[in-house]
Image (tube, rainbow, N blue to C red; front, side, top):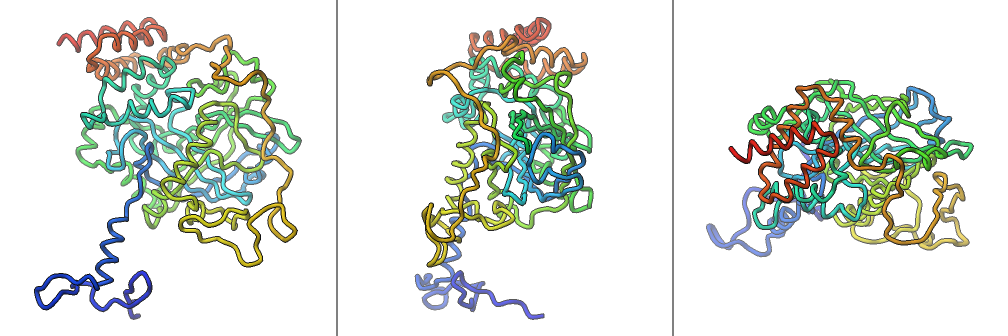
Length: 484
C-alpha cells in the first residue's frame, strides 16, 4: 500500500523534506521556502505554558463500573445502576516540581479523573492524601511560591518551605502525612486516591448528603524510602510514567475500588469539627466507608501531549446529583482550575477531544481562539430566543447550600475540636515505632537546614502541640543534626 503524500499545513505536497531551498548550491537559504519556515515556526510553538502546579503528569484511559447501589444518596445517572460502566480518563501528577522534574520525589500526587457521562463530564480532582496543607484559597499562591524554586537561587529552599509551614499551623497534619512512609509512592499504581474535599450528593427525592471519596488501590500501597527514591531518580527520572505505560501495555491493568463516606447534610452543623475543613479527615468510626464501584485503567494515550498535557480537569464540572460543599478551598478551585485552562489552552479547550463530552455541548458560547463550533446561519448566539436554541432545565444539579450572616473576611466557625493539631497527633500515634523513627528523621533532615532559629522554633511548637513525644523527638533530632 503506497504511503500518503507529505504536505504542508495548507495541504500542498512537499517535494523535498531533506534539503532546504538555497540560492545556488551551497548558497544562503531562501525566504521563499515556505515549507522550511512553516516547520521552524511550528517547532518554536510546540510548547504551551506548563501548569503552575501538577505540571509533571501521566495519564491513561479506562472505565468506572458501579458495583453497589448508591441511588439512595445520589441521582447521578452514571451511578444509577449496578454494572453501569462509564469511560474515564485519569491523570496522575506531582505537585510542586516543573514539567522536567523527577517522578520519585517526596511530594503529594494529583489524582484527577474525568468521567464521560451521558449527562456531561464530571471531573473529580483530588490527591493521594485525604487532607491538604491549608484550608483557605487566599493562601494558596503564597503556599505554592514557598514550595517552588526560589527566585534568586533557582532551587527549592528549606528556609522558604518551613517558614511558610511555621506560619500555617493547619499544615501540621499534611506535613505528617508527607514526611511519613507514604510520602513517596513507589508508582502511580501503588497509591490511593482521595477526593480530599467534601462534596454534596443529592438523591431523587432532593435529600442532600455530604461525601468524601476514597479510591483504594487494588495493587496494594507501596512506597519508597528517601534512600530508595534517590536511587530511583538517579536510575530513571521517569519511573512512574514508565511503570504506568508498561503495565497497561502488558495487560496488567491497574484498578482502584471506590468507597465513600456519607454524612447526612443535617449532621454537618453540629459535628465536632468543621466537616468542610480540608486539613482534617472524617474518622471512619463516625462515617464508615461504603463501597461504590471500581476504576480500571486499560488503555494508554496515543499521544501524551494531546491527551495528558492538554487534559483539563476542573472541579466545577458537575453532573445532576453531585455538587459542591461549603469547603472554602473547593470553592476557590471552582474558579481557579477552569481559569488556568483558559490561560494555558484557550477558551475553547473543552472542544479538544480529551476534554469534550460524549455528546456535542449545546450552549451560546462562540468564537475565540481555535473555535471549532461556531453555529450556522440559523443558530442564534443569545438566549432566550424565539428559535430552536437550547433552553434551561429549571432543575438544579444539586441541593442549595444554606447561608447566613454578614459578608466579610470571616475565620471558619469554631467547632468543639477545631484545632490544627489533634488529627496530626492521632496520625502520629497510629504509627509503629519504626514509622515514627523514619518520620522524625525525615522532618529533621529538612528542618535542620533552615537558617533562622525562630522559624525552627515555630515549627517545633506545632509538633509539640500535636503530640508531646512527637515534638520531643523532632526537637532532639533537629538539635543533633544542627550541632553535628
